Length: 162
Image 1 (spheres, one colour):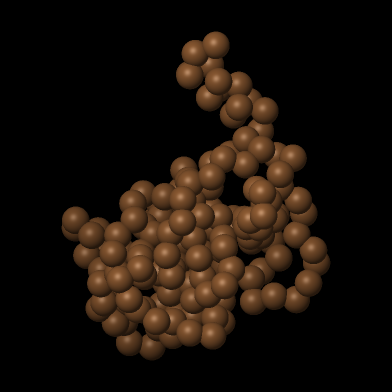
Image 2: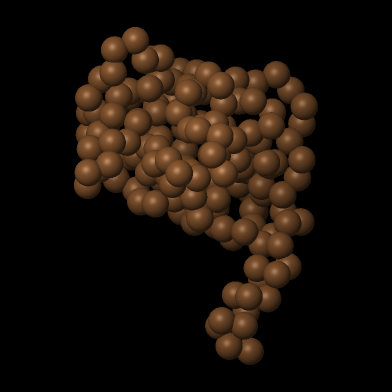
């Protein structure tokens, strides 16, 4: 069996690839197909009266991109900017959005049987924005529906255009 056949067989079995990143002590995963690029953090231009978690905007090759600090959005204990801090640039429907995270780990392929339903607990993350919990060995990932999360009414970032 060739490499391409293995890839299509794995995908047809329901496996998906996730970009994993860290926020404080937690590890999260988002659909790799939503990721446009990963960049080092550079201070954005602040927008007056924007929520604290919206750090501002950057000009990315002619496109104005809002930058959301996920550490502030999720209420992490600290939001320190260092050499590991990165911005994941996402392409969500008709919109480009950048999210600030502590660090990017890797890209993981998770089969559907390695994804469990998240428990129903109070959280700063809207329950509908959590796809589930992924496990791979001793790692536990919180899998996010990043499009739904960024589309939340408190964000005011993406339009409801399909």
